[in-house]
Length: 115
Length: 113
Image: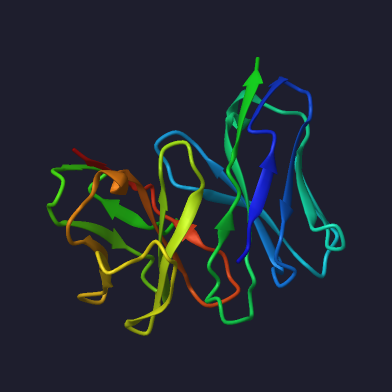
Protein backbone atom coordinates (compact mmCIF):
# COMPACT_ATOMS: atom_id res chain seq x y z
CA UNK A 1 0.00 0.00 0.00
CA UNK A 2 0.88 3.67 -0.08
CA UNK A 3 3.56 5.02 2.27
CA UNK A 4 4.19 8.74 2.71
CA UNK A 5 7.36 10.07 4.29
CA UNK A 6 7.86 13.68 5.40
CA UNK A 7 10.86 15.81 6.41
CA UNK A 8 11.77 17.54 8.60
CA UNK A 9 9.79 16.40 11.64
CA UNK A 10 10.36 19.79 13.31
CA UNK A 11 11.17 23.14 11.76
CA UNK A 12 11.85 26.51 13.37
CA UNK A 13 12.05 29.67 11.29
CA UNK A 14 12.24 33.35 12.00
CA UNK A 15 9.15 35.38 11.21
CA UNK A 16 9.33 36.54 7.62
CA UNK A 17 11.55 33.69 6.46
CA UNK A 18 10.40 30.83 4.24
CA UNK A 19 9.60 27.30 5.33
CA UNK A 20 9.88 24.22 3.14
CA UNK A 21 8.51 20.78 3.94
CA UNK A 22 9.27 17.82 1.70
CA UNK A 23 7.41 14.57 1.19
CA UNK A 24 7.79 11.40 -0.82
CA UNK A 25 5.22 8.78 -1.70
CA UNK A 26 5.55 5.20 -2.86
CA UNK A 27 2.43 4.31 -4.86
CA UNK A 28 2.46 5.57 -8.44
CA UNK A 29 -1.35 5.23 -8.46
CA UNK A 30 -1.65 8.20 -6.09
CA UNK A 31 -2.90 11.20 -8.03
CA UNK A 32 -4.07 13.67 -5.40
CA UNK A 33 -1.84 15.31 -2.80
CA UNK A 34 -3.45 17.43 -0.10
CA UNK A 35 -1.66 19.36 2.64
CA UNK A 36 -3.28 19.78 6.04
CA UNK A 37 -2.60 22.18 8.89
CA UNK A 38 -3.42 21.01 12.39
CA UNK A 39 -3.59 23.49 15.21
CA UNK A 40 -3.67 22.45 18.84
CA UNK A 41 -6.96 20.81 19.75
CA UNK A 42 -8.30 20.86 16.20
CA UNK A 43 -8.61 18.41 13.36
CA UNK A 44 -6.57 18.56 10.15
CA UNK A 45 -7.66 21.41 7.90
CA UNK A 46 -6.94 21.42 4.17
CA UNK A 47 -4.73 24.36 3.19
CA UNK A 48 -3.82 23.47 -0.39
CA UNK A 49 -3.88 20.46 -2.68
CA UNK A 50 -2.38 19.45 -6.00
CA UNK A 51 -3.37 16.84 -8.55
CA UNK A 52 -0.99 14.74 -10.56
CA UNK A 53 -1.67 16.55 -13.83
CA UNK A 54 -0.21 19.76 -12.36
CA UNK A 55 3.40 20.47 -11.41
CA UNK A 56 2.91 23.52 -9.23
CA UNK A 57 0.11 25.41 -7.51
CA UNK A 58 0.17 28.64 -5.54
CA UNK A 59 -2.27 30.29 -3.16
CA UNK A 60 -1.02 33.59 -1.71
CA UNK A 61 1.94 32.71 0.57
CA UNK A 62 1.61 28.96 0.08
CA UNK A 63 2.84 26.94 -2.87
CA UNK A 64 3.11 23.24 -3.60
CA UNK A 65 5.24 21.47 -6.17
CA UNK A 66 4.96 17.92 -7.44
CA UNK A 67 7.51 15.76 -9.21
CA UNK A 68 5.63 12.65 -10.35
CA UNK A 69 8.70 10.96 -11.77
CA UNK A 70 10.60 11.18 -8.50
CA UNK A 71 7.44 10.82 -6.38
CA UNK A 72 8.32 13.98 -4.46
CA UNK A 73 6.10 16.86 -3.43
CA UNK A 74 6.83 19.92 -1.33
CA UNK A 75 5.11 22.72 0.55
CA UNK A 76 6.59 26.20 0.53
CA UNK A 77 5.40 28.93 2.88
CA UNK A 78 6.82 32.37 2.28
CA UNK A 79 6.85 35.38 4.61
CA UNK A 80 5.99 33.19 7.57
CA UNK A 81 3.93 34.61 10.41
CA UNK A 82 3.52 33.40 14.02
CA UNK A 83 0.02 32.14 13.18
CA UNK A 84 1.59 29.71 10.70
CA UNK A 85 2.91 27.77 13.70
CA UNK A 86 1.18 24.36 13.64
CA UNK A 87 1.68 20.76 12.58
CA UNK A 88 1.60 20.27 8.83
CA UNK A 89 0.75 16.95 7.20
CA UNK A 90 1.31 15.98 3.62
CA UNK A 91 -0.86 13.21 2.25
CA UNK A 92 -1.50 11.13 -0.86
CA UNK A 93 -4.63 9.59 -2.27
CA UNK A 94 -5.30 7.39 -5.34
CA UNK A 95 -8.48 9.15 -6.39
CA UNK A 96 -10.69 7.87 -9.13
CA UNK A 97 -9.70 4.29 -8.46
CA UNK A 98 -11.37 1.92 -6.01
CA UNK A 99 -10.02 3.57 -2.88
CA UNK A 100 -13.11 5.67 -2.07
CA UNK A 101 -10.74 8.60 -1.65
CA UNK A 102 -9.02 7.47 1.54
CA UNK A 103 -6.08 9.67 2.45
CA UNK A 104 -2.67 8.36 3.51
CA UNK A 105 -0.91 10.83 5.76
CA UNK A 106 2.75 11.60 6.28
CA UNK A 107 4.06 11.73 9.87
CA UNK A 108 3.78 15.50 10.16
CA UNK A 109 6.09 18.51 10.57
CA UNK A 110 5.84 20.73 13.61
CA UNK A 111 6.51 24.27 12.38
CA UNK A 112 7.40 27.02 14.83
CA UNK A 113 7.62 30.61 13.61
CA UNK A 114 9.66 32.71 16.00
CA UNK A 115 8.57 36.36 16.22
CA UNK B 1 -19.15 27.51 7.42
CA UNK B 2 -20.41 23.92 7.76
CA UNK B 3 -18.24 21.64 9.85
CA UNK B 4 -17.88 18.07 11.02
CA UNK B 5 -18.70 17.76 14.71
CA UNK B 6 -17.39 15.05 17.02
CA UNK B 7 -18.45 14.16 20.54
CA UNK B 8 -17.14 13.75 23.13
CA UNK B 9 -13.91 15.70 22.82
CA UNK B 10 -12.28 13.44 25.40
CA UNK B 11 -13.36 10.01 26.62
CA UNK B 12 -11.70 7.98 29.34
CA UNK B 13 -12.68 4.33 29.58
CA UNK B 14 -11.56 1.21 31.37
CA UNK B 15 -9.90 -1.56 29.42
CA UNK B 16 -12.47 -4.06 28.20
CA UNK B 17 -15.30 -1.56 28.09
CA UNK B 18 -17.24 -0.63 24.97
CA UNK B 19 -17.05 2.91 23.65
CA UNK B 20 -18.99 4.73 20.99
CA UNK B 21 -17.49 7.77 19.34
CA UNK B 22 -19.95 10.04 17.61
CA UNK B 23 -19.68 12.22 14.55
CA UNK B 24 -22.10 14.49 12.74
CA UNK B 25 -20.80 14.90 9.17
CA UNK B 26 -21.68 17.87 7.00
CA UNK B 27 -25.32 17.48 6.01
CA UNK B 28 -25.05 17.01 2.24
CA UNK B 29 -21.97 14.80 2.37
CA UNK B 30 -22.18 11.20 1.20
CA UNK B 31 -18.85 9.58 2.09
CA UNK B 32 -17.67 9.17 5.66
CA UNK B 33 -14.39 8.13 7.21
CA UNK B 34 -12.71 7.38 10.50
CA UNK B 35 -9.01 7.93 11.08
CA UNK B 36 -6.94 7.62 14.21
CA UNK B 37 -3.70 9.14 15.46
CA UNK B 38 -1.79 7.46 18.23
CA UNK B 39 0.24 10.05 20.14
CA UNK B 40 3.38 10.94 18.23
CA UNK B 41 2.48 8.79 15.22
CA UNK B 42 0.86 9.24 11.81
CA UNK B 43 -2.81 9.81 11.18
CA UNK B 44 -3.98 6.37 9.97
CA UNK B 45 -6.98 5.44 7.85
CA UNK B 46 -9.44 3.10 9.58
CA UNK B 47 -12.56 2.84 7.44
CA UNK B 48 -14.65 4.47 4.73
CA UNK B 49 -18.43 4.26 4.57
CA UNK B 50 -20.82 4.95 1.73
CA UNK B 51 -24.43 4.11 1.01
CA UNK B 52 -24.86 2.53 4.45
CA UNK B 53 -22.04 0.08 4.12
CA UNK B 54 -18.30 -0.13 4.60
CA UNK B 55 -16.54 0.56 1.31
CA UNK B 56 -13.00 -0.02 2.55
CA UNK B 57 -11.25 -0.81 5.81
CA UNK B 58 -7.65 -1.03 6.92
CA UNK B 59 -6.03 -3.93 8.72
CA UNK B 60 -6.36 -1.93 11.94
CA UNK B 61 -10.15 -2.13 11.64
CA UNK B 62 -10.62 -5.62 13.04
CA UNK B 63 -13.69 -7.32 14.54
CA UNK B 64 -13.51 -5.09 17.61
CA UNK B 65 -14.49 -2.09 15.51
CA UNK B 66 -17.78 -1.31 13.85
CA UNK B 67 -19.36 1.73 12.22
CA UNK B 68 -22.93 2.73 11.84
CA UNK B 69 -25.06 5.52 10.50
CA UNK B 70 -28.06 5.01 12.77
CA UNK B 71 -30.03 7.98 11.44
CA UNK B 72 -29.70 10.64 8.79
CA UNK B 73 -27.15 12.68 10.67
CA UNK B 74 -24.91 10.64 12.98
CA UNK B 75 -21.97 8.43 12.07
CA UNK B 76 -20.57 6.33 14.90
CA UNK B 77 -17.47 4.27 15.59
CA UNK B 78 -17.86 1.53 18.18
CA UNK B 79 -15.01 -0.29 19.85
CA UNK B 80 -16.41 -3.38 21.54
CA UNK B 81 -13.74 -4.24 24.08
CA UNK B 82 -11.16 -1.51 24.38
CA UNK B 83 -7.46 -2.23 24.77
CA UNK B 84 -4.75 0.05 26.09
CA UNK B 85 -3.38 0.38 22.55
CA UNK B 86 -6.70 1.84 21.36
CA UNK B 87 -5.75 5.06 23.16
CA UNK B 88 -5.52 7.64 20.40
CA UNK B 89 -7.14 10.66 18.81
CA UNK B 90 -9.96 9.57 16.51
CA UNK B 91 -10.95 11.81 13.62
CA UNK B 92 -14.11 11.64 11.59
CA UNK B 93 -14.12 13.07 8.06
CA UNK B 94 -16.66 13.48 5.29
CA UNK B 95 -16.75 14.44 1.63
CA UNK B 96 -19.65 15.54 -0.51
CA UNK B 97 -18.73 13.35 -3.46
CA UNK B 98 -15.64 11.58 -4.70
CA UNK B 99 -12.74 13.76 -5.77
CA UNK B 100 -13.70 16.68 -3.55
CA UNK B 101 -12.23 18.15 -0.38
CA UNK B 102 -12.33 16.10 2.83
CA UNK B 103 -13.47 17.91 5.96
CA UNK B 104 -12.23 16.65 9.31
CA UNK B 105 -13.75 16.97 12.74
CA UNK B 106 -11.78 18.24 15.70
CA UNK B 107 -11.27 14.71 17.02
CA UNK B 108 -12.10 12.64 20.08
CA UNK B 109 -9.23 11.80 22.40
CA UNK B 110 -9.79 8.27 23.70
CA UNK B 111 -7.83 7.23 26.76
CA UNK B 112 -8.04 3.59 27.82
CA UNK B 113 -6.89 2.93 31.39
